[in-house]
Length: 452
Image (cartoon, rainbow, N blue to C red; front, side):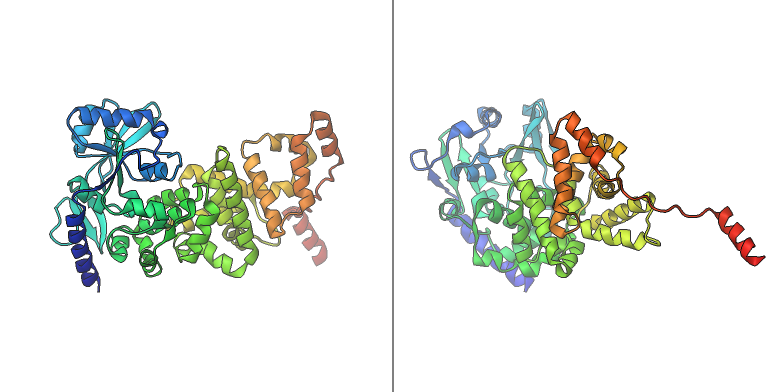
């Protein structure tokens, strides 16, 4: 079946290439691209390359977003110059990547990605520069022409090039039609393309959620049967893709798309299992993702640790329960429960250490809201992790773990002045002290008395 699908795909590619050698050109009077939205550094890189006799175009998502009247976050450039040739033209640049070699050209802290046109590849007869593993492309530095480069891209909406010299859109794969009609179509046979790079399934979910595009039936159909292929992707790459999904400003929609297409289980199997047992957990997760979307959409910063703390909360609670003895748990065991939960998740999506520490702190602080003594409250509020822990605590009202009155108290104390704050602290009931365990000496004394 796989050979037949690949054969069909290769025939389609050959036919498409014959048809698409000359692109459809759409000039300024026919498209709505506002060149004022194009990054000046991107224009400078394109001009430098074209002045030296190379072809150079804006490509992919930035062209798509400009056509959809959106302001692109990133501007990628495609050229027929090799990575080494690009590197020699720009002093502040470096070649990165092994799977796909590209060049980062730096302007201050920002950088632009410049990629060389690549040829379409297949499992048989491909260049030694291309490596496969069970249909997945693990390395591809086979360079080609612009029409070949267009055919090797994933979706038709991402195979659009913008020629700054003519203010024209170059379309090799009917991408303009997809943008106009707002649908998402894979270039070539979808099943084969997902096997080449399973992350394309996650990209489809993100484009569907972010751009409101309908996924074409043939493009959506193989996703369920190909979902397991994500296990072949490195956990570090899946972490990056997860952040793109949940920091897109459309995290709630992404979550629902992942669930609908059976992909969420591949990223968060522990959470998926908990969702099956606890309907309230979905409200908790959606509430957190909605807050993240709101912050991103008004330009506020977000920390990836927060979403992971939410998604893994139930698993952490189970780990804590396993370490609780006689109704008590030590601070060391809480940290151990946190590390264990993160370690189990890391086999699916790596969690960098700096985020793992923050996640554990958010979890640990939840018990402090309940047990903190009055004199410790000012210092607690001043802690760098307090705000994230507070936001997390407020969300726990959706699970019924925290009363709304308790959440309101912590909200009010942050807004009031020093005198009112002190009065609130004084009026707050002190938590009950847990009875201290009797010392070994007293226990042995009781035993000797009873023996007498």
